[in-house]
Structures are given as C-alpha cells and as structure tokens.
Length: 178
Image (cartoon, rainbow, N blue to C red):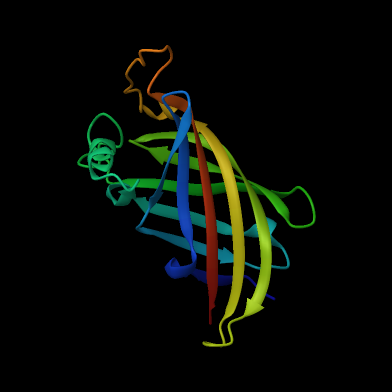
C-alpha cells in the first residue's frame, strides 16, 4: 500500500484527558471538535505525516461551569488561543503494533515536544461504505504548567485542587481517501 490521505471518523473517535482532582479522584473530559491531516502507509507507519488541530473551546467535562473556567484565561484562554495543535516530528516503531510518536504540542501559544505511545489497532474494510478503515489508540502525559496552565487552589486537607500531570488519550478511526 502506498502513502494515502486519511480522515477522522468523528463518530468513532475521541480525544480525551484526565487530571487528578482534589488529590483524591480524577476529572475527565473530551474535546468535541478536532480535525487531522494524516498521510500514512499502514505497511510503514514510521514515514507518516500527522497534524491534529483541536478546537479548545469544544472542551467537555460534563460540567458547564468547569468547561467555562477551562475556556477562560485561567486555563486554555480560547479567546486568544482558539486551537491546540500537535504536529509529528518523528515516529519510531517500538513493537509489533506500537509506536513512539514524537511531535510538537502547542497549547496557549507554548510549544513543547511530547511523545505519544500509539497502538495501531489494525485495518479493516467498512461493510457499510466499503472504505478502508484503520484504528489507532494512544496516550501521553504532560505537565500542564509547561504550557502556562498554572491556575490552582489549595485544598483544606492539603494539596491542590488540580494536579500538574495531565493524561491525554485518544481513539481514532481513520478512513482512507482515494
């Protein structure tokens, strides 16, 4: 198979995150709007082009007040920084179906390198559309303070309201474009 363009099937995909809340639980959320420019050959994923753009205002934690706070200047500052972007700079195969996807992650205008542990879930033919479909999942950890996301509050029992480490995770179903 040669290198082809692939598009995200948003119905079967998700970009999410989780962060420790009050030192005792996890707050989780997703981004509802995102797009990707992906060119890949499933036979050699190390030569792929991957660029993802997330609409930061589409953050959804199932809590309107928290979502509004995340959109504010305390966090994503969507008025001045409407997008979160990731652009791959290197892809290395780490095992049969796993890859280390390194790239530049930009949040709030700050760009830092991050490595994402990606699993190639396989390739199939969609019986409804006839499309060639590929599945990927992955996760990474970042320190939110590295991107200027420094807001916090002390918790009465010790510690802080929002941990520094954020776990990013995704499930992507991609459709090959002819």
